[in-house]
Length: 469
Image (cartoon, rainbow, N blue to C red; front, top):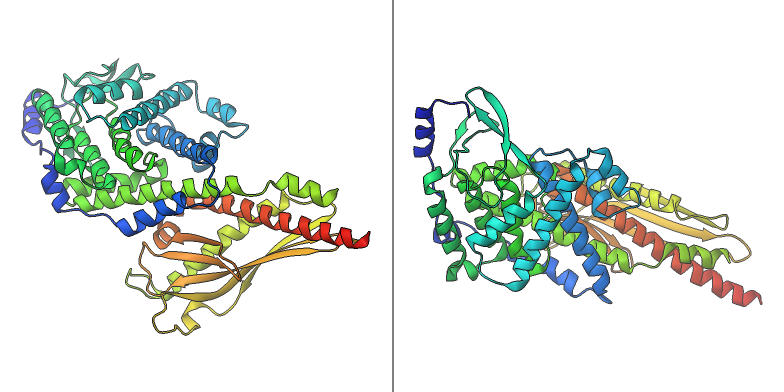
């Protein structure tokens, strides 16, 4: 750190140990209703394909593995790049190579680390210090050195993998304040205490998000390794979600500021802030998996085209205008993705269109007594027509529904008129983060709707052709 030796002793003395699990659990809780509902949506999906589900699990694992290195500043990512690599699109390897020669080895090491985490979760063995040290080896396998601040300036030193630190690693935070981690001489004891907590009956009986948050927080408070502690902590947290829902917690680079804020809040005693952050990321992961599975179940667009040629003011602190604007934004995102899908699914015999119809806004619509949602006065019309002589049409309308008394966790919904299909996004997902997960879910939703309408159009046109014979 470039500080005099006496200051190291001061920083060592300032170390604040992580809480017991009993204290952590007594001050935190999880929205189990939403957790259970999102899990049930996947488990109860009709015609659920194991291949499609495993593919969706692979996507979120790759996204988590890629962005864990970006959070630490090992390389830079953006929303499009992350999901290009996660979905393994045609150009993903080219795009990865453009980021630098070291990026792929780092990514692959982190990916192998998540595979190791999955193996730990599958075995359902108690977490051990040895397992955590192996996890550090795996996640840092492609990293040869790390930067150390010395009295003569920054220096690159060999990174000891799988071994606890032998030099202090206190840091200066983004606010310019010195932050103390466990002193070198107490690190082994603190790690033994953490593993003991992770093996306790109370911990093993807790909700997986509570478990994930505690394990993550305990490890970063200790900071047992010379470097790579954040990557190890995020992977370790995923052991518990893997055991519960077969998927990791997907923390993206775009979440970094909120992530650091939540950790700082926990340092100040607000453990719930960090639990809530991890819950939100776990729900993101569940929703992305669900939408990916639904997308995989959609009719094949190319096959359908071949058949046709030869588918307020609220308790959350929002004003009514903000709620209405969230509805507008959600519909705009979905409309843009539908337009992209329609442009990619046309032929000389098929014409498609999408139209956003503005009606009365939320602030001017009466609310029925007891209603949880009210129509926002807007709807999307998606229409496909086939050319003569087999003129047919297929259309679908989605109406906008806004939460009556919106909190950040409440959904803005698009509901199919005379049908059961829905597309939903949380208020805070729309208004604060402009989430990359929301955009990719909207794109998957749009592709599925277009595919279903084209399949319906093909069936109608085929029936008309039978009548012309």
